[in-house]
Image (tube, rainbow, N blue to C red; front, side):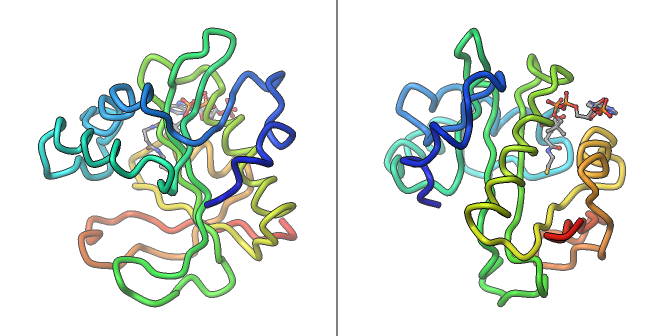
Length: 181
Ligand SMILES: CC(C)(COP(=O)(O)OP(=O)(O)OC[C@H]1O[C@@H](n2cnc3c(N)ncnc32)[C@H](O)[C@@H]1OP(=O)(O)O)[C@@H](O)C(=O)NCCC(=O)NCCS
């Protein structure tokens, strides 16, 4: 995703959140997020040790397909998010039909229920449809993940299926939002 130069006008600071490319100073917070068993209750914690993950993430700075969520006014790293073009998934070809972008949001626990997830989702959905010409957006959520289900449904996402892919056979649901919704 190469949207950063355009981001200042896409994500006004008045919204309470900055979305920007990850920086070296974010890595410790992003590693904490990645290895938090509550945040990752419904998804996978990386298999490699946290320090190795952080070192690899640091090496990849500048090429990551995710954005750091910075909360305002405190300017704290509050999570990560991405809106990525769906082309391949673990080597499988496209299988979401017209839904050619995927939304993913992970907010750190201290920032839950402050409205950040909603702001980030709104900004990334707008970005996908207005700047990336997305035909539709998919998002994956576990049926017991009430926070994610609430968030997706309040933007009009509807269930289109159950995720079946290597490493995903645990009942996650596929949700989708069409451009016209
Ligand atoms: C899902 C998640 C992104 C929501 O972020 P958040 O910043 O806490 O959400 P918000 O404060 O913006 O709330 C968004 C909506 O979800 C609801 N919500 C938030 N937490 C909730 C919870 N634990 N249970 C039920 N609803 C919840 C809010 O009430 C709000 O709905 P409303 O606007 O109708 O009142 C966050 O909980 C998270 O990162 N969870 C772990 C990772 C994850 O599951 N990501 C989703 C994968 S796409």
